[in-house]
Image 1: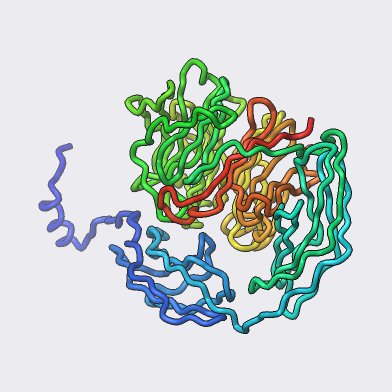
Image 2 (image 1 turned 180 degrees about the vertical axis):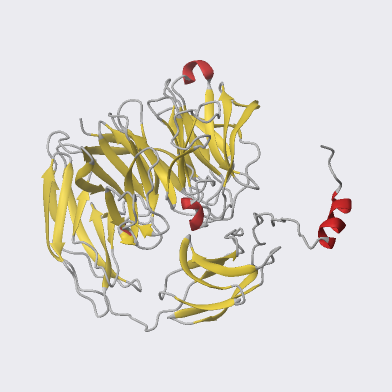
Length: 551
């Protein structure tokens, strides 16, 4: 049958009283970013924010207000101001995203950093911690003491070893800090002098306690035996991998290049810049790295990075330099935003590449199987979709994730995943094919977690003691590097559970971003202490350690 032109068909339909079955196209265009965010008022209890309207081809229906990656509240699209609670003395970076009726979320607007005053000036120091005792177990020392008191609240204890700070135990007025500390990785057969002081929220500190001397044992009988600083770095070392010949490769998130060095830190040099990277003035840039099981012959380095339009996975050959002429883009379209970019890569024992993808600050994407956001993704090394993925033709391996940044496999080939919570709980998950892990209805075990088929986390951690990023598994022991919690968790994998959970380096090195297995059965550990909430290169003071673990 010959096609009839629409201009000829339309008058006939109208004359006959008919109509065309027209369907409006789906709205997939996000709003523009809200502009001109500013603080218009500030007290010890609240900040008033105001911003200029975003635009959208259909209409803005809501604004989502965040600080430092945490959603605080949402307001209607007709509203362009809000008053939010703050904590005196706490510096937070505020920003706003716009959302339209179809659920499309804009990129974040500008960030406004705010430090509110304290409601009352407190110049009274806490009392001195008392009753300090110490016990050595191999090359580790466990300290404990009696809590100090304060006219407001004690929020931290600083532990000194031989007169130098060795670590900090942190808490808050609502959740007082613990009165114990484990100092690990000490020299065998050595005596150490310890003392501790208390600190309140406004920085008043007590005098140090009476010293106690503890002698370590003759050898390491502890799960963590020592740590050695291998190198320092002015940018953020995010992804790190060790190749079979021992070379350590790590990405500098905000410089957009890859560094190679020997295991002892010697021979350190930039091997090249990753093409097409753009930061997000938050947590985007050069993120995860991985090498596959055939690296000795194929020389492919796999990289997860942020581009001007998305997060993506590429591979580039490495032969002493980064061969950018060999770049292959394997996967595009992972949502990007200021925060919630995910970014970890890990090859599985099946030879497939797994990627942790954040929700791009659009929580609904985590449940949308047509989106790559809020997922653990699985792809072939050449970028194809594996035929045995749970959803035909899709890279999605599991969904319902918020901002996963840790992936690791145990000796049984099972995938473990670490995920940032919003403001209540972080999660450690045992990921199964096609599993739904509940976000945004469920954060950890809070929220609407009774939905059919939702998989509960194996373990949760309060955000204040966690905000954990990378994980590694060595001899079926799981290690978790934590940012806000400034510690390394260690847990034994026992069946489908985690047991004997311990904490190391609490406050010793500051914020910890990445932990990776070394080829000799130990760990690499990186810090993320400054400059990790912007895209400014070389404004950090970071360290990379090799951590020796017990056998």
